[in-house]
Image (tube, rainbow, N blue to C red; front, side):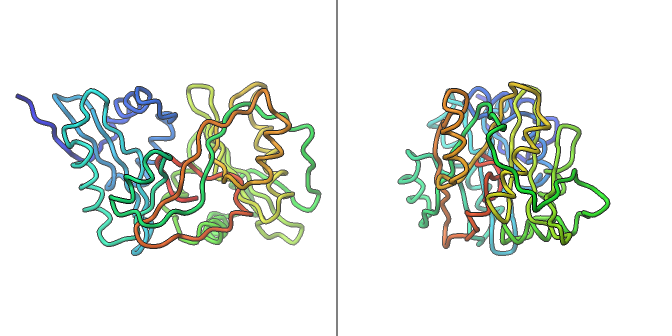
Length: 294
């Protein structure tokens, strides 16, 4: 009888991991999964049975004190065999004593508390559809340009990202903003300071993941949002994870009732303590399924 083997994920596993994610209704393209894997190959594990990927989990050590995890999947036909437990043990070994964070669907909040996630933080909403941008008021106090540009270097972008995220994540950011299917736009004040930035990643399924999108004011966020949407084609679906309390999201949902839909809310949970973030400056995060807390 064949036994299940838990091992580190390899680049050649990404096709099978993507297929597993699709089977379990996780909306993640291979392009996004590749970016996440490349930002933490040493924290990405799969369960393999007779050469077939039947489980996966990803962990990200953000600093000496903080970590995040996601993409914890076991195929339905192989559940109840402690495969998920064995995958999770690998993540616990990888993160060590760090404060681990996750995004939890509502039905897993209580079970996750039994796993040691003692802190419930703010919620994030999964939204997708098309957005009509013609009614969005734009700010005239910032200039939006593509990154990299003459006035914006990576170090400056990293510094701004760290200001929002609270933890420096150079490795993740370098991978996330690269690639032919990725566009990063930066908003600059008239004084030459970064006042926001946003990323879109287009996948092979004609879906565009929008995030992260940060801005110092709602006006800057809206200007970046319109600029990013201008890089998409008409009718292209946008997929994003937005803090539940976002006033801009409420406006968008009201203006796009027939085309923009809410799918689910997830809760940020941590082992030991919350990791604070300025929600008023966050329109969307990179991903709530397998990424960092912003």
